[in-house]
Image (cartoon, rainbow, N blue to C red; front, top):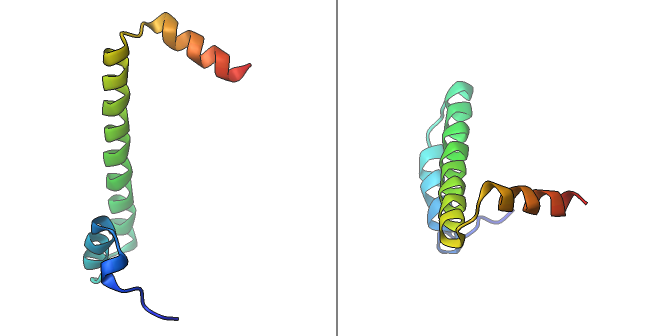
Length: 71
């Protein structure tokens, strides 16, 4: 198996490779995964809040959107 040239990796992949070059415990690995997941969930939440504010949506609008997609 050939190694992927570092230049083809994203900046995130390069950062994670540097982190994972060190041996970490399974507990640390689990915690790191949770931190990464929480970070991206927070970003998604911020983007959703911004879209909500930009569009002037109400709770009724959101209920209508959710009901449309479930039909």
